[in-house]
Image (cartoon, rainbow, N blue to C red):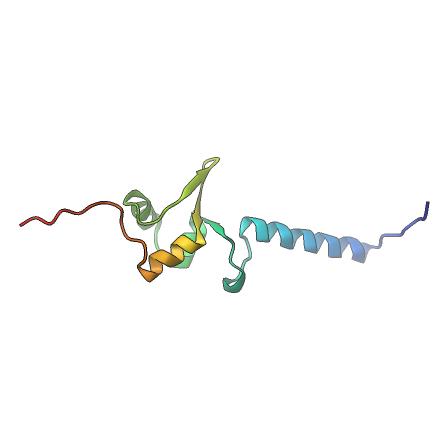
Length: 98
């Protein structure tokens, strides 16, 4: 069996690649051109420059769809773009009063 020597530089390169792959999976460190499919609440607030209360309102009135997994709320980046373009509006019906 052949012996292969792994250098410190090899390990650092492997570690950096692994960290980049993990960031891509969880959405951390992504750029606008390489946006993750799902983002967390704090990322939505930073992206839209809104408060926690405003984000709660968008969830409550059905304007911003979300998915809850293990107590963490995730939002589709595509849905956020649709909201910004005006393609998704509140799902609550508003009755005009005369």
